[in-house]
Image (cartoon, rainbow, N blue to C red; front, side):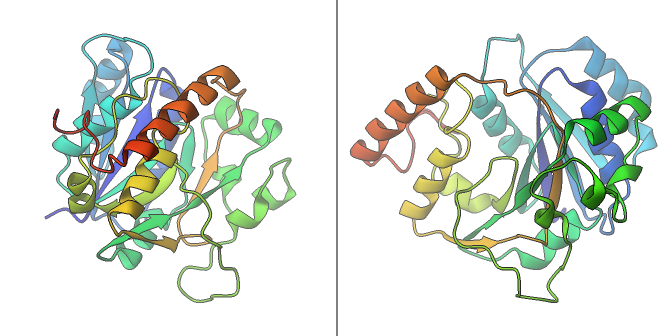
Length: 265
């Protein structure tokens, strides 16, 4: 059985997706599948996969919407959970390129009753432009990132399991880099599809529900690394606040097994 299913939340950025797939093609561990979780129905994506799926040394599943109906990321994540073959699910966003030991790190650290929390390197505008223009992940190798215009460079230091010197306090879960055994997501009925705006719903909400169901946390800082491509923020403060209002209602109701998730209750 496949150990890891990497679920890539993706929307209208095929060039970025190609960079992610290129990075996955050079992983130090190949015991995984990739699931492209597309919140859209894009012929360009379908055609690309039809022509190039054979170029990759791992299995690729493509799950998409029937129509583009606005932000439905959580709905797509639930569809992807159902399509997955892995015992452990790892979530990244379509603007995050994984380090070469990304899969290895999750395989080595997965355990029962624990969510694994990674962080991200915030690539600067110049290095992102170089990567995207030249369609290459070479600038992410060696010391290039440390001499670039990027932020959160400490997150780019790969230590694996060799050192505990750089530990992470129990910071909030980032939806762009985290993993958990699939059975634990099923126990809380997956992602809550009531969230139809970006931010909060795909990370803060799932985190509190997992914690409420007895799931602990483990840091993947300097173990599982992703490089976040620079872009302008794509969500509004108003949308975030509406999500926070919805979250407060759900916390009050204590519905840690959500009603509108993998199954509709």
